Image 1: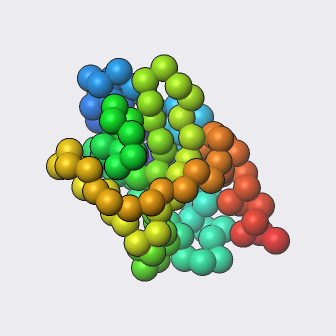
Image 2: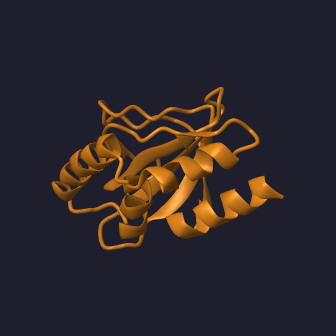
Image 3: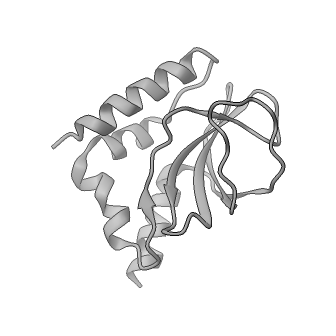
Length: 133
């Protein structure tokens, strides 16, 4: 069954992103549009991670013209995962320790983000497998 709340949020996110020339990857949209799939990473997590789709894209703190879309956090907000989006480039996944990027301010925040997967699909499979074993 489609998750109405996620579909509405994903539509709003894509509308915001399309205005700046980028889009959410299809595998990400498909995954978070279905309730059974969207909950799978939450239920498998042994470290209390949960889906937390960002309401708006944030400006990248490291590259002008790039954007971050939050999609997962651990239970204490120590680690947050984001899609990293650039015009004309494939999206990849990054994470940050103890940082929440502001969705309403375009001032660059200091902080370090780490690339952790080349695609959302790669991230999801690896997260699921690592938490299952």
